[in-house]
Length: 159
Picture 1: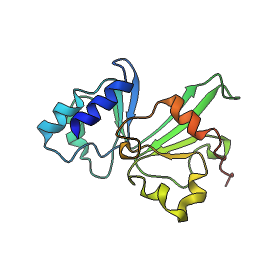
Picture 2: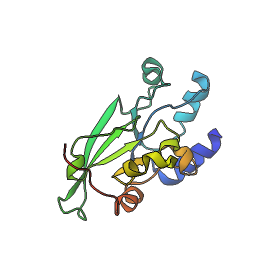
Picture 3: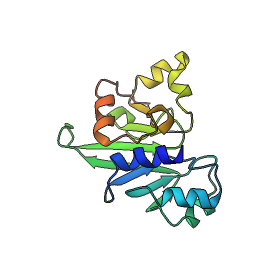
């Protein structure tokens, strides 16, 4: 499995690309995990998951940053505002910053079980996406792929 993840990651992420990993890195030993992450391309920013130990993630000495949550703005000439706000967390968030202005919520954690549950259909009609690799053929998603998926999703109501 590790070789599939490494191969698929490196096929999409080039050495100088900026990438984000949304938690729960590995259940393997520290040595196995260290070996895996040092084979991945890109400048990777890490969001801690519920199975991660922050000290272990730091000890890998591989990530550009380690946090619980990231809010970033991506320059995007196709967006009417000329940028796209993206909120990233290991966990799905019901309401997120600027959701009512079209920001995108990306999460992991649920292994696509929430997205497949009919009770959550209205949530996933919004600009939300489970980016866990097991739902995407063990590959990361590019910003362009995420934009395409989000194109027809609805903007959250303001609360």
